Image (tube, rainbow, N blue to C red; front, side, top):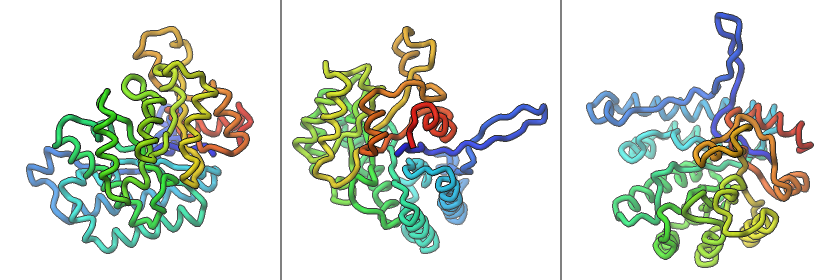
Length: 309
């Protein structure tokens, strides 16, 4: 299955008659500075959190109508969680709506994942950073628990390895995580710090499967061809009972010979799918999250261009 990441684009006609595509999910957030100055009371925070859950609930029929059965949930549904998680955890209405949301995902056979931000670094040399990272992971795990989603990597909490050359630290921290976090954790290869082989070694020590990103692999391939990398990554899912989760994105057309920064930027649409991922999709043995800027429009085009159902 092809997976949608965080947004659902819909057209809007501007006054000049031109059409733009905008995210139809009206997710609200809060600013740290304003929070610290006392701008948000408990009721305001509750309303932000409740709104964001309702926006996800409203999205589900659109996913179903567009035959999208894998969705990456935004990591900002409960913004400023580290300061306000007690408000969420004591809000019976919020928890009830999360439960309803999870039931809708399950009834409609939609796989739900999430991808915490770049500051989630379990391999950091700083104990404070590691502690804050675990709080961030607990937030995502708590959200999935309230949705009654399985504690397995089918509902992946996907992170990068973080600080380079810290595999031992990463293994130690992962193995110390509580079950509701570790059971959902997946590790994604990146362009510089942790290639596929690094993560396979970590998998061997932790059991955490690899969410292979074919675009990142181009930049940091450990000397492994695409087809072999695909096979090695999918093997890490053998004991999970879940379909392997992978990512795809492309360099912007015309920038293939550009500098590093230009080549790693994501294109609007997918114009190239590595052969092993394409075969994996056509044989329905992987779920592939599409990291293209045009979101659901890119998925629709990809289905037509590559004969992916």
